Length: 149
Image 1 (spheres, rainbow, N blue to C red):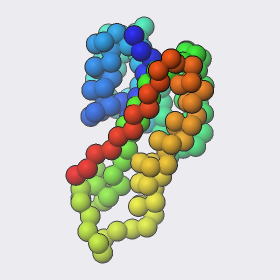
Image 2: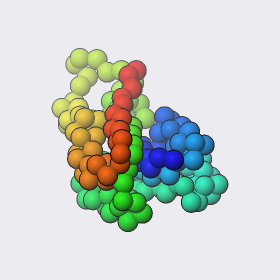
Image 3: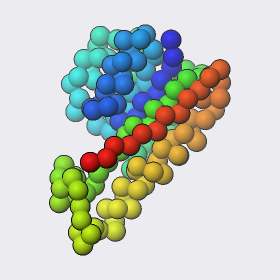
């Protein structure tokens, strides 16, 4: 049994990582920016109340990381895996951008910097904040991922 923190666990790969870890019997801390948006994550929590904690985490809010850390640290003294999965595509259609792929001439500085902050800087800051809990594991792993379109 591992203790696992998964960012962006309310849909897609993060949700599937959550499901797979729970099937293995792991204790999972699943973060989500909007907790109520995933009925599947809520169902998993109902089915696994002892092994799944849903923790709010909006990577765009600096104070949210400290609140997330305090919530997790109150429930465990170690983490075996940290899966940095959360990310955004501010240029994608779902974020109000022009589409999944933007072209030169359509890029906007503020949207690119926000996307860089969430996808590149935030995983490092999350790892740094949870380092003390990771260090108490005999074999900690930090897994950071991205997707391409």
